[in-house]
Image (cartoon, rainbow, N blue to C red; front, side, top):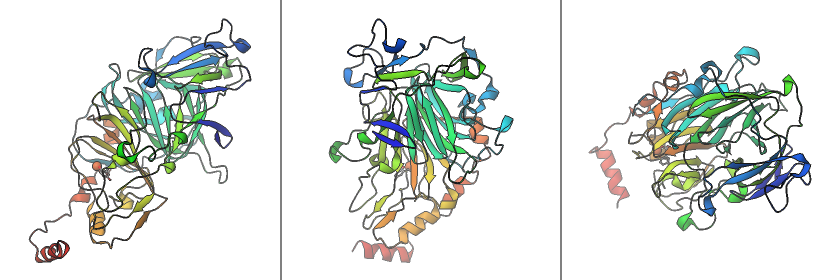
Amino acid sequence: MGSRKGFPYQRGFGNEFQTEAVPGALPLGQNNPQACPHGLYAEQLSGTAFTVPRKSNQRTWLYRTLPSVVHGEYERVSEERAPGLWARGRIVTPERLRWRPRALPSVPTGQGAVDFVRGLLRVGESGSAAARDGLSVYSYVCNQSMRQCALYSADGDWLIVPQQGMLLLQTELGYVHAGPCECVVVPRGIRFRVSIQGDEDTAEPVMARGFVLEVYHGHWELPDLGVIGANGCAAPRDFEYPVAAYDAPSSGETAAFTVFAKFNNELFAYRQPHSPFNVVAWHGNYAPCRYDLRRFCPVNAVRFDHMDPSIFTVLTCRSNEVGVALADFVVFPPRWHVQEHTFRPPYFHRNCMTEFMMNLSGAYDAKQASAFAPGACSLHSMMSAHGPDVESYERAAAVELMPQRVSDENMAAMFETSRMLLLTPQALQDPSRDLQYISCWQGYRCRFGEERTEKASQRRNG
Ligand SMILES: O=C(O)Cc1cc(O)ccc1O
Ligand SMILES: [Fe+2]
């Protein structure tokens, strides 16, 4: 078990876990005793169809103080409560797009404060949640914890990637803490509440920013390693799962909870007179987890050339086509660049996949640091040309190639999907949009036939 800031975790991607916050709360030898220990109610949460093969079957048994059925009617939530979640992807464009870091909410309390639900902004989407096919990409900003409310998505698994600010997720299965350069998976249907945590040392105002990828189909998996062998990339043991933790039963108006339900990309809510975080014990393999991206063990070319970024895949969500992901979550972690006679930054590229890039920290080697600051993101849709900006190209094409350490400061990430995204007007009109983006490639000039370059290439090719 690992622990940070007082929260213990269990480890191992996709393991069968069992945990109890009160000794003896887990039934022994069966899931459904006639009467559960401590008067708890048994409830199954199925993450896959009952009948999928055993190796991909996911379910968890929950032992709770009240069954989840005890709640009021679902009501549709107003768009004002979560304008960016209600925003739908309608706009088609192959344009290369970039956004500066989204502005953090400036009003610390009251009406102007923004919780995680209000701060979500859908950037784009593909497919249909109802048909369980496709995905959505969001960014979020917030400066207030979710109060007496929780959220679940019936539409798919969420992969949350904080860029700034510590988040504490209270989930039905326990607490998961995650900050910059970590990620959290919250599987479909699991209710969670996001609190933002201040820096205890500096008492800085609490503000958070990050990104979310929601997949409507399947679940996140570790990628196959092929010829790499049994180890490398993200190690299963570094994925951390919560231990059971529950809110003490209480009643009265202050105990009442609103639970938001994202259902076919609309937002509903119900009320209940008690906390949904009332699971005293659970066992199973369908649970939220977190992973520290700095633990990623990069495997790369150690002599020449730039490998495809699939080598840096942390998690993948398969599509129905063998070898093609619905979405991959890829990181560009601290590492050594050692390749000889090689243009080391990302190459010029047109891809049959869509790439949503995020800078989480430091600088990204294909872009000028000031133009793609931490918190910035970009979208290169399928077959739209992209690659290093002129300054980055000139530098990397001329630099003397010594082994070079990509600083521990640096962490970029990418959601790569086989789908085309339809964009929301809200994301396209957001003030953070960098309307000058494509000018970063306008300074390239044709050097073909110039005497100087011909001589240099003759020298290089002997
Ligand atoms: O476009 C990008 O920056 C992502 C990317 C990185 C890389 O190292 C190779 C290809 C690629 O698309
Ligand atoms: Fe790319």
